[in-house]
Image (cartoon, rainbow, N blue to C red; front, side):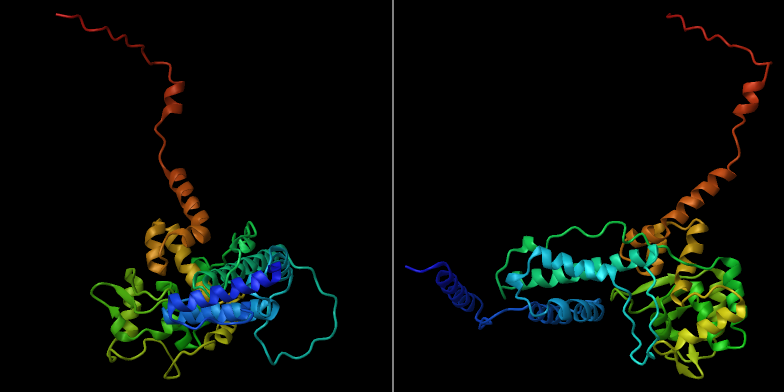
Length: 360
């Protein structure tokens, strides 16, 4: 006779042998931790060329592994996951500055409503990544576990993001504020004309601009797919000017003769906003500005999603749907009336009696 613990050990040994026979691979013995599951999952993402591989690696190694990495996948339970997620939601945003000087001890201000929403959104994202890694561990046969332990509802209203964008006047002011930095001015104009990301603009070469079709070709986007961005006449003229008499392999946007690199735009953006006398915005808000302008001019959500490189209208509707509603309201407010109010007050109308036709 075996007690429960001995039976459990025997079952585990049988499972490992059965797994080895079924897959031909030597099963991992000992405790299979969440850290192991994370690394196996990230390797699988890398092998299949997942476009979000780098971001997933950062999130899992920064948020999951330090807090939960030593726990066995089979031993993780709902209360522990809930406590971990709540800690992320109530903490302050992580800083990327490793050389930040030590600050004097000051009272910590409570998180604002928008900061709380952002932290809940971060907690939801990391929860989603953790669940994906745990499910992969079970599905790949690396361990046995009750998957209901990590089926938890997400924080509600965490993704009701408030986007920031510049209106037409703000865009013109920013471009004027870039006059003393012509290379950056070209980059800013390109971003507001086509709504491309900073990384996409940095990779553009002259051959990606098709003057006849009025398009910009994005060979690789965040999703890993390519797309064509259609340009209005003003944008087409701009790209024709900056691409004129240059080799097809030259980068369109240069900084002192060299391609723009990671984070090169940040200080230039702060300087431009200060000179323009507008509120400080990030470079990514130029992408929001382009999309917002298109929608308020009546471009459909589907077309805007295609321009931005989204696979569906879900993200566009989430960020810009209220602008589309505002546009519809403006359209209907501008419609001419049918004149029913005038007709209702008229006293010269006559009542017309329609007699039924007589049968032959």
